[in-house]
Image (cartoon, rainbow, N blue to C red; front, side):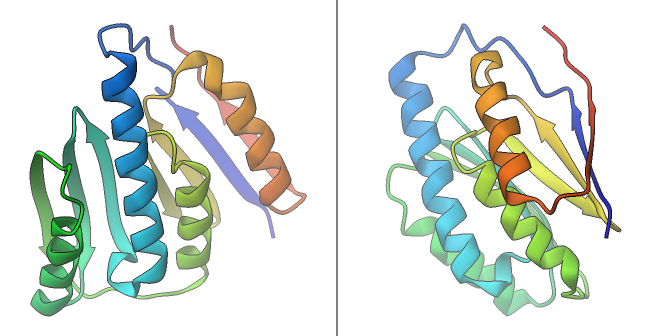
Length: 156
């Protein structure tokens, strides 16, 4: 199995964000990641956090699963706003589900990042503080199977 990881537009200067706000966003993202890992309804869902606002998008197989996700978000009381862009669409759970959970767990402390799984590719998107990138890349190398190809795009 060959997995390719692409980091696209991954590094951004987040100088406008205060430490307290960023730390709170990190905590919200970590909490969401735990909830998503425990709930299969999140299988086709991506989410980011910025200034206590959660943007959530992707696919849910039923209206009931969509409502379950919204209800879980409601249990995190520090969330200020939810930008719900979830769409009802049939969803197939396969090996990509495992890879998505793995990538999401690696990105749990990076509030403005997410992973897209296509075939055997993990594409990391969003914003990550530049100083956190080496630690993230090290974690990826430790958790993803041996044959990993990384195509890295770095912007300042």
